[in-house]
Image 1 (tube, rainbow, N blue to C red):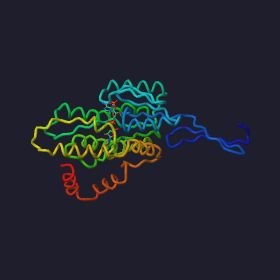
Image 2 (spheres, helix red, strand yellow):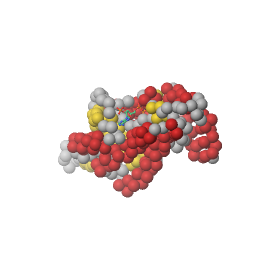
Image 3 (tube, rainbow, N blue to C red):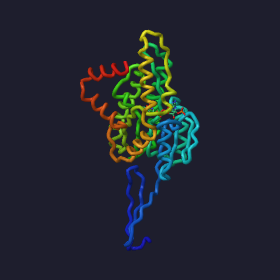
Length: 294
Ligand SMILES: NC(=O)c1ccc[n+]([C@@H]2O[C@H](COP(=O)([O-])OP(=O)(O)OC[C@H]3O[C@@H](n4cnc5c(N)ncnc54)[C@H](OP(=O)(O)O)[C@@H]3O)[C@@H](O)[C@H]2O)c1
């Protein structure tokens, strides 16, 4: 096969995996000689679980999920990890890098939680919790895996439509998701010369366990029924939202892009909404949001 009538070469695909291609006079053959290591935070439920399922169906991916509850899925490796705990993160990094020859090709920062209520009613504990899971946890996971990511690797951060469009009584959540966007954009330019690509995915309402897990702070009545009405509208929209598998498909598609955009909104109606929020006067956008969720 390797005689003088056979040409062969190596090239790197969009995931920076080495592909060995050789031609004979009659045919050509391609072999993946490396697999891709994918790390997903928050893989026990909703979007993360569906994303893990999608990657695990392809033998070219070695999939790790990092979260607190056990995940039993074929071809998916679960590592117990609370992203707000630095020791857990360090343990996950050392376990994966030991198994996978210090090579991580794709990091999907998906773990997240929600808290609703009026800012004045949030306890300091609630504030610290959501920021340490949704934002500080995401930053720390990224910091910890980055030394093992090289040219062609990718980071996909899961933000939300609530990042560019802040929602009242979910203000803290919106702050963390806007923070994820700002983090992604800054990191994207830090890593640009290294050939590591960074992008964000912004889902809109999605039907997952997120709705029932949302924590609610006390309501002392000053806002009348506004908090209750706003949160139940959000809950209703989420329950009628798109399935998590739709968001997972988008994440999978984005992971294959050689030069991803800065962010991707999931669903055409949310794309339009985010577009309008960018071109319309900010004061008008804020008033419309007040009318819907205020
Ligand atoms: N659902 C929506 O409408 C929607 C819309 C926009 C954006 N998003 C974003 O999409 C992401 C996934 O949410 P989802 O809708 O799929 O919600 P979900 O079904 O509640 O899943 C959340 C995942 O995050 C993990 N998680 C939560 N706290 C964690 C912690 N401290 N450490 C590690 N993992 C943690 C959970 O795992 P364990 O409990 O096992 O730790 C779970 O796997 C979140 O970032 C969310 O903000 C959701």
